[in-house]
Length: 474
Image 1 (cartoon, helix red, strand yellow):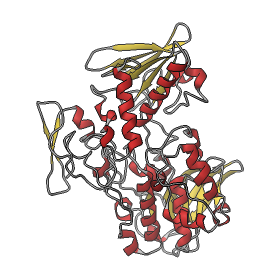
Image 2 (cartoon, helix red, strand yellow; image 1 turned 90 degrees about the horizontal axis):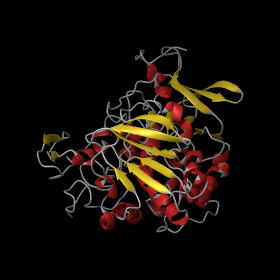
Image 3 (cartoon, helix red, strand yellow; image 1 turned 60 degrees about the horizontal axis):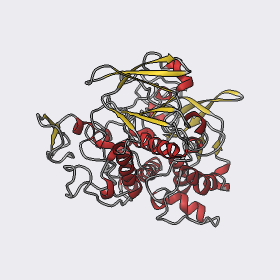
Image 4 (tube, one colour; image 1 turned 90 degrees about the vertical axis):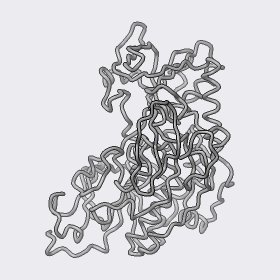
């Protein structure tokens, strides 16, 4: 098949990669638009990644955790929507929303489980061929129990997330020396310390590495465990000098559950329940006597090391880009997100979720009708909210269906908050959305001053005074 003899394949399905919250929402919107969605899921059930952190509460209440098109589809079958102000766990999200949605007759036959996407390309072309490629269908190559299979698609929505590709523990973006050989001591980024993984932590010494909400959840679960089981010790390692970015805004946070998380963590550190190691950039892991492991680090405080029984590497996630190698994508070199989205979410300058609702225009690539959505669209940035993903797929599906006016329209309304994009403690207005921490992101730890300018460019000035000043969002 060549660009000269291949018609546009309107009868092929819209392939959606991932049967998580955002992927299933995309399928619901596609059905409303009269499109034919085909959802490809690696696991054997919907929400397979969410099930692995079922014990973790979400930050946002139910009213922000479900998609409008999905609710409309569920309502036809008598679904009872959860109370809007309740805050679900990951398990609640699966049991009360994703499972019922995936089992609806309109969707159940359109989800293929146990199929892993190996690659997405254009029929008959590699990425170096440009002329006429938009007239060709996509080819999605799958690995299943039966073998390798190619599926033709008119459009592809990649909602596969980042859960399966965690960042390494090593500080340089690559595994620390000895990290690959130390798998027996690594408990993952969100272990269930009070349930499934209790035996790994009870009465033992654990190291939690990371400065995100995953680390906070694990640390606080271990604090609870230590109250139940004497001898449980908790060590928290961060690469920077200050944990303030994770402590966040406390009671001023628009999401109370998230604000309370930061407050509880600060109190536990100040009470001595958690030993905090600052400037701890992991460089190596070495087996130690007694079945333990020694984690060594470098940093501005000089060499450090700690010997523990287990390690929770809450160091974030990154997108799997291998499957899209043969597509013509426009990705930011820092965040690995779509280039037009990157300035809004770059964690070097933002620790906030005050990202304006966005859709197809921001998420598009030179490869027509291919979109990354949901957590994967954020690349390595950590501040994604489900409500943002639902607005993304509403717009993206509208664009695929040819309704470009609807694709450009903003249909998501989030409250304003003064927590982010302002000097810490300030109550000045900020962008629309939920703040996810204090202003300036990582730059706030380095004494970087950001000046708001009336363009898309943010100017940086190195400040001799540590801390954050002025507004961070341009």
